[in-house]
Amino acid sequence: MNNLKKTNTEKTSRGNVLFDSKEINGISIRGYDFNQGIDYDKLLNSYLSTGFQATHLAKAIAIIDKMIKDKATIFLGYTSNLVTSGIRDVIRYLAEHKKIQILVTTAGGIEEDIIKCLGDFKLGEFSASGELLKKQGINRAGNIFIPNSRYCKFEDFINPILEKIYKEQKETGKVISVSDLIKTLGKEINNKESIYYWCYKNDIEVYCPAITDGSFGDMIHFFMYKHPDFKIDIADDIHKLNEFTIVQKKTGIILLGGGIMKHHICNANMMRNGADYAVYINSGEEWDGADSNARPDEAVSWGKIKKDSESIKVFGDATILFPLIVAKTFAK
Image (cartoon, rainbow, N blue to C red; front, side, top):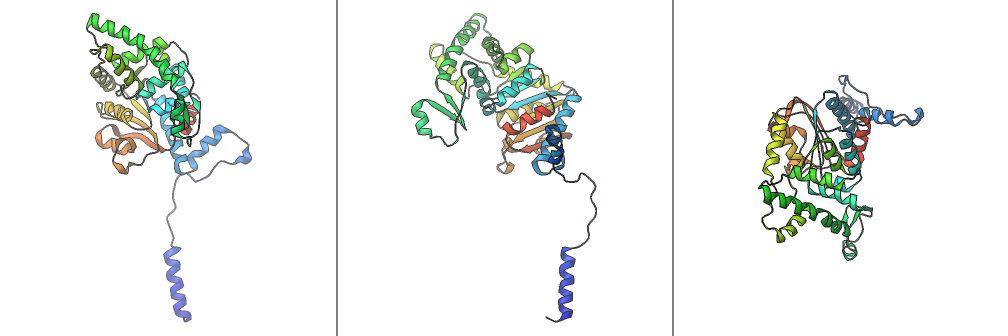
């Protein structure tokens, strides 16, 4: 290759690679400097400038702080597996200290809180053999083991309550709503470790649109062998939740996981043309089109979150992320 051709090739290559750019205004990427010593508050503050999901976590914290300062009505939704885990105690703290106004969860998110008052769940292994656990009467949820005897205790607890509700139903003709049933459970368990005890004490509404999709559904199924005309009203709750949401001045939603609780909260906020603030925490990608995994922008298209809202999705495990969020916001 002659020198002229080599020079032209080099010039072209450099021009393609080392072309000039515009300067960018904004936050410079920096992590935490451990030469400062260990300061967990400053460590979490440094997430904003760290990048990737650390920055999303920092933005989620800022949005929840704004919910609180703006006195927004806060809706907290969570999947049942989080009550299976130690996040149950974080949610209990929020209910105990009246930090949130509305809870929405799935059947396991109700029953497992009550069951934990009757007996502990134990730490196990993800890799434990399902076949061997079945022989021992142990149920596995991830790396958490739940002895089947806990559900036997739950049946002993729940049947007298169902009998009392059924008797009142026959005497008055009134069918109990799911939210009133949850209040009754919180009252009857009378245990300060329970989320729903504190919801009962502090008059926090709890909604569970899928109350039969779990052990509670099993108990109702067994109960109806004896009382086939037993009923629970699900229509009352959807009307009550929507009517409540419509008149709120500002709303903020915090969603841990996906599924029916996520959509239930978002759909209620559609009645007021969208929530003002939204924080999603889950590990799902949106490519299957399921609402469970969708980012907040999809909810904007439905009018479930306002177009000028402050919202973010943090991709990750809520058992890691939510305690950090609570530490920097509600508990600060």
